[in-house]
Every structure is written in structure tokens, then in C-alpha cells.
Picture 1 (cartoon, rainbow, N blue to C red):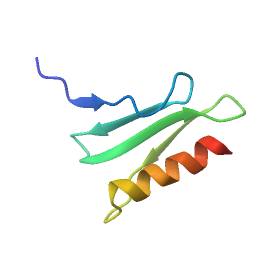
Picture 2 (picture 1 turned 30 degrees about the vertical axis):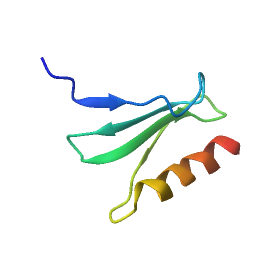
Picture 3 (picture 1 turned 90 degrees about the vertical axis):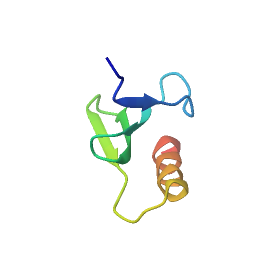
Length: 62
């Protein structure tokens, strides 16, 4: 059985999950906000990977 989503180690423990979804063909970031609710960020159309990871970094800082 082939694994669908590749998980990368570009975030530390407790900072959320950053992975590439082959079904949606985009990068995804899941994290828990300050209220304990799970939030999901998806890479926008025509947004390159560098810009998406910069948005992820902004979310992690705040």
C-alpha cells in the first residue's frame, strides 16, 4: 500500500503538521489555535512553496 501524504520534518514537536497532499496537490498545515481548536491552512492557487511556508511561519510566531 502506497502512502498518500508525505510528512516532512520542517516543524518542531508541538508546532503542528506540515505535509504535501497528493490528492489535493498542495501543501497543508494543521495546528491547534489558542482555544484548542484544530485549524487547517491550505496552499493557495498559484502560490509557490516558499510563500506558503512563510505564511506558516507567521502563524507559528503569533
